[in-house]
Image (cartoon, rainbow, N blue to C red; front, side, top):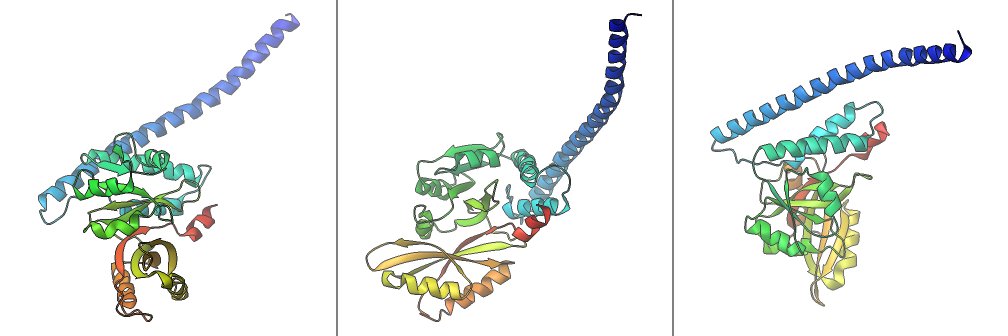
Length: 290
């Protein structure tokens, strides 16, 4: 036997030795894929069962999208997660899964405005109808006229002042947050007419109309009391509105905080306005996994 022929046979034998265990691993992956697919289909059946039960009970409002519930699912998965899949990838996978099941429950329309198109498209699957509005005000009007289910607007700051116009729209509240994929801090907020639900950790948001000259005094006072000053909007030379938040654990906790705010030490005549809440990720949970 020539040396070249011997080398060729040896090389082929080595390739076969590699191929066999590789094929075994791939067969195992195929089996797992089938199991995952079966579970996805089973989950869809259970979602349909939930829909049927909701429709039987006339007292239950049929809410398709529940951001607080979604948040709790993701936190539970993050806490039990281990292995090579990153937290960012895990959230992305489950966001797409949840979004798909939202679309199963019925037509769901989302409007948004501002420079958040990429984040919104990444957050919701292609099955969800997304409508880009020219402005935050148009998005709010679309909710008000029931043209859409929720609006997603950029997180408030000195440029994104839509929050200062919410008093024009009765019954529209912040119900959730759209998290930045890297920092997991809120990139935008979700607004709707549906009832606010609470998770284990929530940021409740309030507005307060004050004299413009008192902005610094009130921001310092709120910070001293444990509130987070977020933004201000000067309405006129004499009147302004400020936005601030605090951590709450439940609806009852929020109501107690609101009572405290109404007994404002600086001016008891001021009337704080509650504009909603969104669930946030406890960084301690993430730090354990990073």
